[in-house]
Length: 496
Length: 95
Image (cartoon, rainbow over all chains, first blue to last red; front, side, top):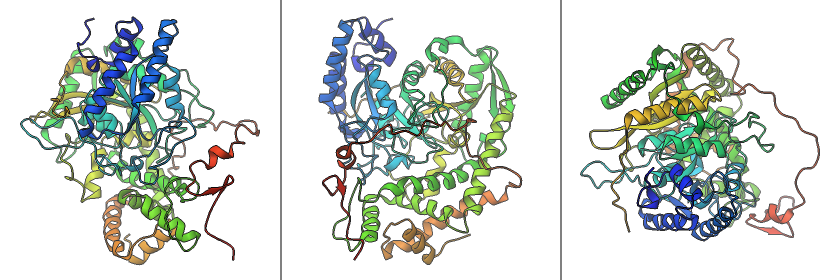
């Protein structure tokens, strides 16, 4: 294996092997990334940079490596979505509400990463409370996508809500990053930034210490430059946790070990309902090419039906706001978070603190959630949406009788310009039309960079798997990655 | 189903979010746009379909009912906007 000349061009796997064999020290590697982060502030990918902490962690890693005690991610610099609580490091959830919140505890996922030796570069920007598909709802201003259309200087969104993590991975500002995915917040930004993102099965990663959005849908997952890197990072993020009763007590497989097993004999389902009117022809063409790639490697292509697909997004916009309205009730201006000044009484304190602390999209979703859960409307909205989820989950169960994984487009289009979809909430919500179904059913799914539009912007394909079958999802993703030979990188226009 | 200005004022009150009078009408428009779109769920026959309560079949784990954490009032109140002697401070509630 020949290593890239520039350390920031390393994949996670390359860096792991280089650090373990002492070809580069964690300190050298970390310094290169700290510099890359500082030089890319124009992208606004980070809310909080932690260079001092990173270099202290790197020095500790180098000391452990010298003693032959390195962990699975020893000395590897990562970026953390600012939705994961990090002890002693401000955690904002992209909101004014938490703009000064410093957690006294560490999320389980990040604790797992530090226990494996990883180094924290900082906390990445996101849509406020992870509510958005473009990273434009962040109180800390939008993130810019490293990618631009050919011959254009127009800034594009990186998708959302894990937009900062996606930009940081695509722009080589970190080796890999964490994300969370409630309706597509890992896979949609991964797709439009030419990166890999996997949302594992609900319960695979602990949700403890992740600022809650919609508890029955939220899952953490890795965002990386390669499928191998996703396999490596997911294995370290996943764990059963006494602090999250929905985390699942199943062994975490060595996903990397089975990565190159290929797709020979695998049945790939093509759900016909994912062909939507008005999708750009490039999306359908890419999907067709993806199926051909897998077929050429020995997979069998099977047409399947998921009849309730079109109801997934509207059902999500009942369930997610309902759960959010309940989860976000905790922000009261008393125990933590923003507190309004000059209030008349306790109710005034609650109402003003929440009005000032939450941005427009969060307020809108809390009101939707409050309405659908209110007396007289519960059955018409929330109960009906939960029944739709059962039908959607059954669709998947029936499809998986005929196939092993499903192949779909990841997004209905490439990255768009800032502000392009801000005036119409429903138009913005439609970005998640292909990703949201699996959150409702709890299934694992991954976005893999698969091609470029005529304008030179990345597009992704999505692989959906059976519950707890991330290994097969990663395997199929790896086959797509090999066939696509994506390799494209954004031009580095932001260098300070 | 559509919402009007009174409904929006009522749910804002339930949600404890102050809504400036100038923001009521735009919120009515936003919410009605979204509810018109989710209305398509009504066309699905859900009779006899149980609601999905758990995405992965598993029984809820139980543990011994014992104290596993606590005794750290300083950490608990560290992020409070106003606190005194490890108490949260709120506006006067009882006259």
